[in-house]
Image 1 (tube, rainbow, N blue to C red):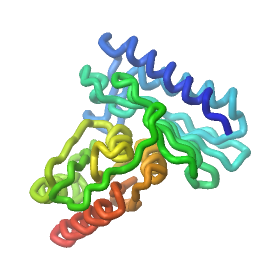
Image 2 (cartoon, one colour):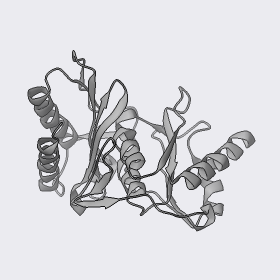
Image 3 (cartoon, rainbow, N blue to C red):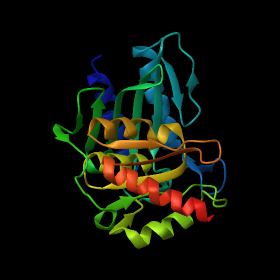
Image 4 (tube, one colour):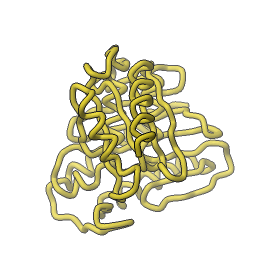
Length: 256
């Protein structure tokens, strides 16, 4: 497949988001007061879905803002039209558009675009990962105590997987922790070697589908921890760091 049109679409949607970034927004809540959606999220998904319906009419589509179309083929697009809505609504400039294509559940293509940075992270299965036109790979960091890692916190702020206990533990054994507010951006930074490792719980498929594939194509490793209790959950990094994060999370889990 040629994904040039898809990448152009993502850039166009990013331009629309930038044009509206500093304007007042219609802000609604979804699952709770922390879980926001704006008119820009909805319009971005509408534009993406309109394109996919026209270009790939037999493909299924799963979108964060309600698009759920079952197609006749084995292909499915997983769409996050604006990852980092809380950031966007508050004028904080880290937000991203994330699209992934799967065939029978296996990664085929993924793209994460960060409009404010004009950075397009992309990968096709078996063809490596790229940031704009530069090939990227995960970092070669060998020790967690020398690693810069990233994570996030769920909208539901209770229960064993609210990430507070895990964060406190990881804070003490890593060089630093970053929380930009967009899982898609975090995963893209792991693929580019800017962030050495990542973990998070209670994500959704659209938050992680593209990023997981891009990291693997950048030579990294992802451990899928998804379960009914944890939601979409994972650790990621180079092989050693990914395994080390997983081991440390297991220690915390045993103490809870």
